[in-house]
Length: 240
Image (tube, rainbow, N blue to C red; front, side, top):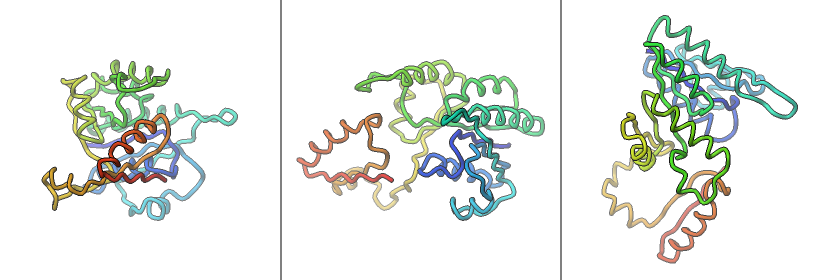
């Protein structure tokens, strides 16, 4: 089995999006699988040195980073070259073994649907939002409606969905009950010493980690924070 992970952001982009993806992809190589990570090229640098100094990972001969230069037009850049290079790479790799493709990029989904026609290629989508049903949003934008169309059109054609919380998995199961899915929370370890939910509630502290802007529901967070504070629940906000 060969794994290919696709992320359209640039190499060494600050924040969690690329960092978490690099570590997740690297984990497959750490247990012995050939793994390829396709990402935007970013600024020129030594990739092997970056793995150790920026991402805190040792060089692994089974982990291959493909840094692909994005198209540029004035001040805008476009990720299609990353998708084209990943497409060629996957088609070549499937000649020698089964290939599992993982991405969080909705723009690559239609490529992935086509790739899955090959018996040696399987495709998995990593979900970070919930666009399949927009009724929870206070206001919707054109990009949200576009993502909803993508999810209803392409997700039923995936081999599986990767969710980042159990609650998110439950939401997607309610919309797509026949699609296999799993939930792997990001950034936290299991609290083995406190397994009882009632014990966790006695701590009366919630932690929010992430961006604080309107699209992430900032107004909702502030309203809820005030109500919880009145009941003695403390909320900690952490952002970069």
